[in-house]
Structure formats: C-alpha cells, structure tokens
Image (cartoon, rainbow, N blue to C red; front, side):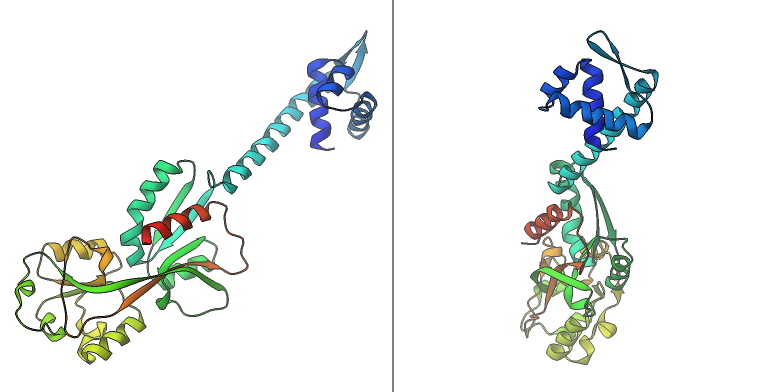
Length: 293
C-alpha cells in the first residue's frame, strides 16, 4: 500500500468516475484501474461497486476512505513541517549559552526569534561550559555559544563562527577609580571588590603575565557567578570592579590600565561532529553571528 494508491482512492471516491479521476490525476484510465485493483487485493476487500456509470464506495470502502484521508493528511503535514524546518520556519532549537554570550545574546535572540521566526521553538540553557558540553554530548542541546578557550579540545566537538571580543575592567560612572590620576595599576583595583564570571585558563594566564600572581582570578576575584547580568547590576550599584568582555556592559565605564589589559574572549558556536544539525539551527547561527558583530 502506498500514499499514491490512497490518493487514487480519495480521488475516485470524490468523483465517482474512473475517467474523471484519471484525468485529474494525469493518469490513463487503465493505470488508475490497476492501482485501485492492487489496493483492493492487498486489503482483501472490494472498495467500489459499479452502479450504472458511477463507482460507489462499498461499506468497507467508506471506512477505508476515512482512514486514507487521515493518513494522507498526516503525510502532507509531515512534509509541510519538514519544508518549514528546512526553511527555518518551524522546529525546535536548543541552545546553550555561556555567561558572556548569554549576557549579550539571550534577550536579543529571544526577541528576534519571537518577532521574525514565531513558529520556531527556541530553548535556551545557561551554565558553566563543562556542564553545557556534557548536555550537548547527551543530546540535550543542539549547539552551544561559549568561549572556545574554555573548551577542552576533543575530536567530537566542532567549533565554528569564532568571534574575538575584547575584555576590560569596568566600573560605574562616578566610581573613585574614574578620577584616578597617573597610571592605573592592577594592584590599585584590588582595593575594591572584583567581580567576574568564571574565566578560562588562558585569560587567567594572560592576567598573571601582565600583572603578576596577585591578578590570578582565584586570588583577586571576590564576586564570581555565571550570570554576568547580575554582576553588572551589582557593579552599577556599588564600587565593585567588573572583569568581562566590554560589549557585555556598554553602560559601564572602562578603566584604562597600565599596562593595557589586552585579553580577549573567543566566542564560537559548538556542535557535535558527525551529528546532523536541526534545520532551525542555521537561523540561530545567522542571528548569533549578526548579534556578536
């Protein structure tokens, strides 16, 4: 039994005429007759009775027609859903965001998907990179946007769309350090609470190389959490100093350190190698690239 045969059954039931149905289906009448006969043989029951010049459904044919219509409808809906997913107009995409990307991307990503792609289901997870990678490997997430430098290299992880983003030390407007005269050393920052999300080993190494062992995040950071939005709010309302990517807190004032900080985050989209991407992911990938720029 094929969908083609079921469509032939539906057409003949509607027209009651082999001739008319064959014309509408762009078939010859013998071809349509063979299709219906093969379906009847497979089902073991006649589907039509000949009443004069019309073909009329048998009681079994009427039941078969009802089921055929449902099967064809479901098949058409499945095909339509597949096309919509391929075009990025449907489906579910599950994205994991690290702290930095989350601060920049979560709200605009949700807003853009709601306005431009309202039929796509978008699930966003936040957390530490290690936790997000585990969920990616367990197929709970489709892709991650994280600092690639915090990833442990692995053959099963594919990283793409890398974007460099500059790090900075930031404070609220009117902070005492904004009025500092002369070169501003990192040691001076330690007079105040220092806030940060967990930093990669590479960033920690860069800070130590520039400012000495006291600049290691394990030593100098006194306020640490995954949610950078909360840290930004704390820094906005206190004398704390935030270490983060500059773009994550454009409303804060950047401090000019001596020597210059010079650290960057390298954000990228991480997926599992040899795993088919959900059709809606290219839409999210494009949006992420635009927003990160």
